Length: 151
Image 1 (cartoon, rainbow, N blue to C red):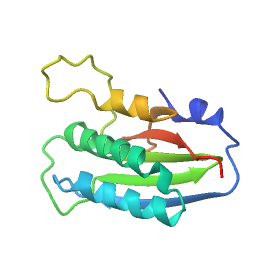
Image 2: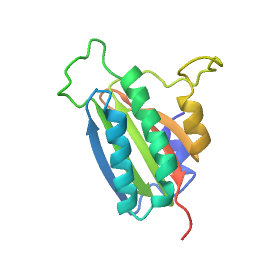
Image 3: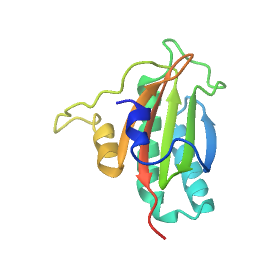
């Protein structure tokens, strides 16, 4: 799934938007930091109704980036190899997590007793649409879009 064809169906590519970005370290605290950033940003935008779904989505995206998106041998905790960006545009809020890997996110069929493997299923269930796109220099961005509730 790539970003441009899917998001283009939901609104014009140009126009007004809001965005907020949070660089993240490669630590176990990053999903929690990402959730806190998401809550604060959505509340500041007057979109508290999206907080529950968005925080679950962001947590799954960041966890996947930590698990699968770091360069081989990465170990410097001071670097910020993961970037969370929230974008509000054309009736959507898009949660985007960029990492250094070009590996395509794979939806797996989890075993009933597996402790992981359900993240993309959860993202699919909570979002209007989701996908990924390779980044120009290195890495990829995995994103999920939520519809902004009508006022």
